[in-house]
Length: 617
Image 1 (cartoon, one colour):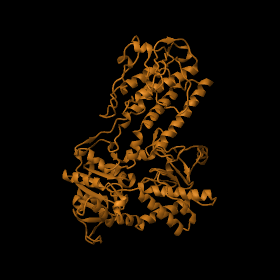
Image 2 (tube, one colour):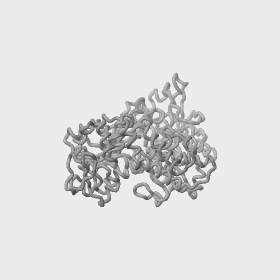
Image 3 (cartoon, one colour):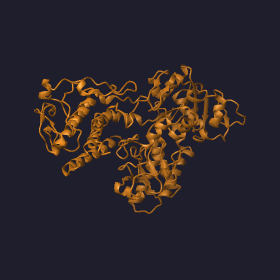
Image 4 (cartoon, one colour):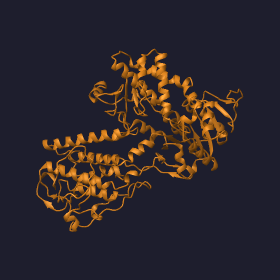
């Protein structure tokens, strides 16, 4: 079934459930090929077409007898009573089902043509449920689950590469991607600092690093010692709050936050995610820090040792900082670049292509020159500086972008500081510190001609987007795993059924008799189980870094705000022509007509019932 016809079928199916007399019944057509989710801003085939325009009359033989032999996917996590008819509640004229014996490979398909008398409300609700489940199955044709390409570039804003003449890059997790082994090394070293320098109990050594425990973008309540995920509206996603390594019950969360699960704006209002009471962990290097915080909290709690969560947070932060400040991380990577640096040949290919097309390149990183030089020689070759028109190290971002206090200093070939005044930024030279205001003055590289890539939304991208009008590209390595999950049949079917079930709940909540309320409660329970299951596919503790159930995460909101485009790695540029224009999809607002598959299950259902729902408003 095509997505256009699926939308029409959803609307038609729900019209039969209205308390008004339905229009003469029609059957949808046999169904066409899926149109996919590619193309411009028009969504899936444009407007939703009513079934009356596409299908034959109910006099057709298939309408009378039904169609058998189609498998119904097991979306539900709870069994439901079988429904044999499709009535309208409240005594209206109804349509009935004609069931056929189960065909090989699945349950029988039902047809909803013809009329009958009244039916009880329970049968009516379950008939709507079962018909919706069948329609959801028809909505997802074979192969539709592999639409997302992990190597794609996703647009928040329209960007034409033909207008971009200058490309800028961060280094860590942008030009250089690192192995997960680096997280383990950072964790182990910081744990040792806690024991040796801060005199924490030696038994903390028994806690090894947990690779898949934390996720980027989480918030940490410093005073309560809670790690959690917050959505774009500052609400805690219940079920994703951890004290130590154990989840905190929803009831306790409500008690801790005064009867709500909302985090006030002033507590997280720091522009760089550093509110007075809540810290957001925004970069990939923060994964070991979050895990160490959870582990030490867990140790004190399980051993019934009294402690101050504020002191713990500060000590762990300082221990993690010592790993970077003392140069341990740089030393590990420089000693074994092959072990820690991934996909260096792809970075080389990107730089070669950009330079070959006449683009200017620059590098602004907080890392020291010796470290960058070692990694770039491994990935690109000993003449790597020939690719870049300007190279700036130890830039001290984000202050580099918003403070004009530090002047540029030049480094000689050995990395030693020079004392000459900087009147130009020359190719082949290495510069340290400086500020963006001098950079703009000396290069003249301004506005949308410049596209800068970085992994940290605050330190790398926010100021460039908001204050200077550069184009920005966010590097989000987690996209590779997330798109693989989204492409699975289990996720696609579960999410589509979750959306449909939510629309069904919204539509049927007007039935308030006791029996109907019990059925709605069953549906709500199934909805919560589906939410938990789809969350666990990404990360059992915290789910996707982009979603909290139906809302975007706080991280996702900042990603959309501070980046024009985002991708898993800069190698994604190799898949596009350098004159390519990225167009953001026109995702419908709540009051707009739905154009995308995941809205077909909800938005389309509302239109036929505007008059019927008027009494609620």
